[in-house]
Length: 386
Image (cartoon, rainbow, N blue to C red; front, side, top):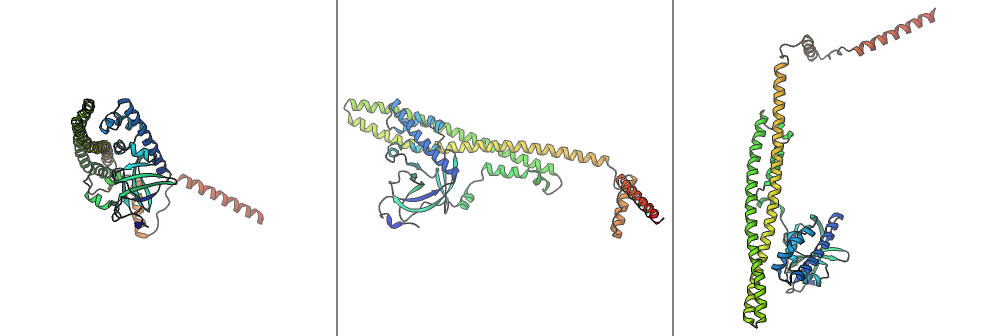
């Protein structure tokens, strides 16, 4: 039940979702909090070592890659964390910043959360409203005394938008993985056997051509993403270099008593930081695109190898069948035993009387044994009469 009356109409508000994670999701969330805490230690070390203070751009330049390698935090969480040092300390390490990449409502009672161990779908209950924070980030993951909550910054008259899965599926472009999945299903043995027509080699050949086209598209997409990565990283390097030079100039202007120059430098510094924030988000999204392209390409190559094996198996199978047909007796001929067997089956179908039991040495032995017993029994009876 939503407690809307608890939140003043004009005050920043947060809608509380009380999480109910399973043991695996709970462990992943705990590990994420620990990794985030370690990230803050790394940022403090970098700030002291390189004397960059709270300069987001320079912190990113010196700390981003070490943090990603050591903590395995999602890239977006690292980017958000660069601005979060002061607020994190004020919150005593009990909350993490979230955005729409890190957390998304998936249904009436399910939220998807990115962690250091992958993404988990977690059930939740509505728990009313809490005090907001001005919405510097869309949401927070909160550690409570008895569990976890997600707080979304909202106004009392609106709720976080729930993702419509069907709309998302309909609107999403046909991606490589879904296409390759269909192609893999198409070259499965059962699918080939059920394919219309008798030329199964033709079916597999068509599948191989489609997979090869998907491979070409996957390589093109990966090349485009790599080119974008180079462009974005080049621009980031330019901003980092300019920010480093600007910091020295601002300090020099302050030392010379030129506050006007220092103010101009700070204004430029703020502009660069704003650019850097947008650029960092674009880099994170492009990195995700590269990962998807690499995964797609691996799947395509695996499917292509599998399809080639299917074709080789079919070629061997058809060659064997052709050989059998060429060497086996024709239906009109065959051995006398085969002819007798076909004749017996025809008689059985016409009369309804089953065919006789086929000849067997075991049956002869069984008959002989039965005959010997019968002879012995008769002899015994005759002796008893006499």
